[in-house]
Image (cartoon, rainbow over all chains, first blue to last red; front, side, top):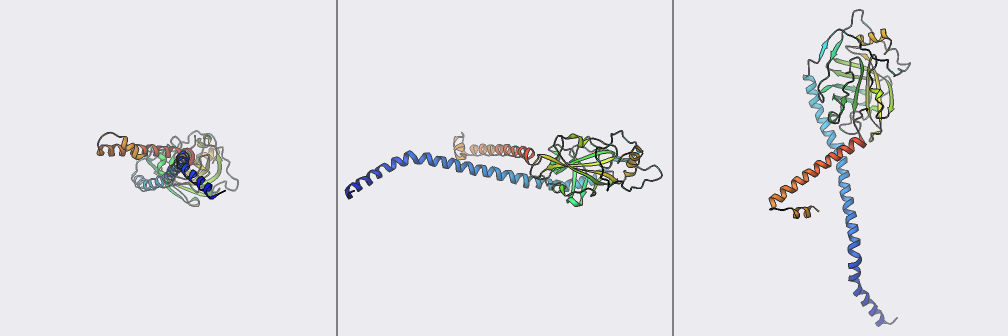
Amino acid sequence: MSGVRMEERVSTIRAELPRIAIRRGPAASTVVYVMARTVVVAGVVVAGFLAYQFGVTSFFATRAQADLGARLAADTGRAVVVPFTAPEFPASPIVVPVDLAPFAIELPGSAPTFVAETPPALGEPVGRITITTAGVDWFFVEGVDRDSLRSGAGHMSGTALPGQPGNAVISGHRTTHGAPFLHLDRVAAGDMITVATASGVHAYQVVDIRLVAPDETWVTGQWEGAWLTLTTCNPVFSARERLVVVARLVAGPNAAAILGAARSGGSA
Amino acid sequence: MIRRIYQSLPGPSPVRILAMTLIALLLLAVLLVFYEWLGTTLLDSGGSIG
């Protein structure tokens, strides 16, 4: 190839370049531009989601705790001493491990006292739950609807209140809204749970831990004796199933009355 | 896109700024509702049964 022909070819290509740039450049850069924008927007949305779920919800739940404590302390008048009448409930389907039963509770010779408690309004504080082995120390409210659970944990309306005969169900967040039940999986059979309500401080002993589907409503049923059922999401970062911890009442202002009646009836 | 929306709005600058603020607040509210729904559906429903 001679030098002249080479120069002609170079000048021809140079002449073509703007047209090539016009034909190919904008289309390719538009695709890259749109993709880059989409990635940035998606990143911002995901980052916002994570910040909201793990930061904002927990901030408000933790802030609500201080308020709930003050409101609970001021909440008097829901508890009253009455003669105990055992409600008619079926026996619990929960089998207490052999090495845990029977719990040595002393029953008084005379008629034991019983402190009845009426549930507060939806969203109002019910009590404070403490589980040392799971790092739980949290005020919980009445209701397990979305709004009530913004403060972290709630008592399921329609189930017994803690310390009352039947099955008291408390549900709590495991990942968001302060994650009060984050370490509920650390609880083992035999561990103690204390729940302070308007009727006093009630002690429960864990007897069963299991995983169930979110629609297995039998775990919220009312049973003879006095039980506490805690439910939370499982695994962490997923609402796929529920971790359920069942405990039985072993001490408290109403233990003698409820367990005495249940023993004469044959349960708990 | 934000500039395009701003330019397409009628009226003087203060009105446009007010409209843009309202649009931003509306989008933020929609985004928070979406976050709430997504969080309770996939991440953590609160552990309630039924």
